[in-house]
Image (tube, rainbow, N blue to C red; front, side, top):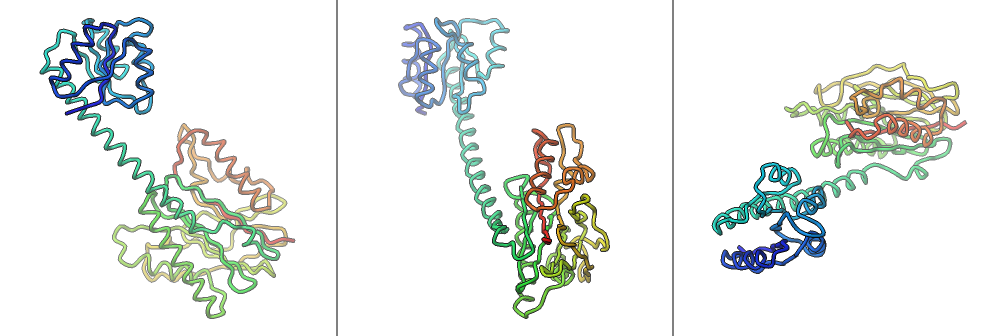
Amino acid sequence: MRADILVVDDSSFNRLLLKRRLAELGFGEPDMAVNGVEALAAIAAKPFDVVLLDLEMPELDGIGVLERLHGMPNAPPVIVISAQTEMSGVIRCIELGAEDYLPKSFDPPLLKARLQAVLEKKRLRDLAAERLQALEAELESARQAQLSLVPRDFAALSRGRVTVAAHMEPAREVGGDLYDMRWVGPHHLVFVVADVAGKGASAGLTMARSLGLIRAGVRLADARGEVPDPGDLMTLANDDLAFDNPEMTFVTAALGVLDAQTGEGRICVAGHEAPLRLCAPGVQVMGGYSIQPALGVIEDFPYSSAPFALAPGEAMLLLTDGVTEAQDLEGELFGKEAVLVALGSLVEPAPAIEALLAAVASFVKTAPPADDVTVLAVRFQA
């Protein structure tokens, strides 16, 4: 088993002895360093499979080398070979990341066994790192593919008296939130925000499936020259999602259709966060509709929509519970009241979303995201 080995020892006799032993054991000829400074320079210049490290050396001793290597990404494994036998020294080396500790009066078979064990552990770690890197690359590719599914050119989607904006941030590489905006005919905008139960790849696939179902319903209506009813679109999506769903994967959603000429529309809410009305006096929770079951739960459920109207200058904001349930380092939730405070009297879609996201980021600080975050706003201009 040949390996790239670095021997670090200030004694020329010890270096020569280890060189011969390693050759006899079949590991090949090692590189040499006479102190810690040379060792660190050699490690920086070349990846080693293992380092055989003495402790007592001039300029920089073995403990100093271990301290420099501790926490360093891709640092090689270290076996300490030293005349020191005090247990405190052994413990300190292990605490600093040394894989093993051998006395200088070792037998060659023992050295071979320890080297083989360390090299096998390194091989397995390297293999795991390669597979993790490949998985991360695949997940990043899936993330970009998922983000490409939702519209992001909000200037192109804004038309006439209607302006729009949205933001989606998966908690992991791939998430289960979605939003969409589609014009039907010259005057009607269909918009939706939805949240798939769970996170990760499974939720991401259900997200893409749900988005496809809703878009299919919108296109069918548009092809017939009709304005789709939000309840009909929800029913269509639910019929597919609820059929043969043994894992009871469900999707909450809020879907609306807005007439860009009048500000009137219809909305259907399926187990989702309440829509918000943005207006100059301040943000309000919208009413006038019923909250129906989430999609995918009850087969053949007849979803219905309710009317709403935006006065000139008002906007509607839809969000997922990743906003209200964002957690800080102590596990406290951001909450619905904080959403209303963050939005204040903002009515322009993009500034309102930016203010809300900034408030959430300030609240969670360095806490890892607990859920996907999605926000969409549609304004009927004065």
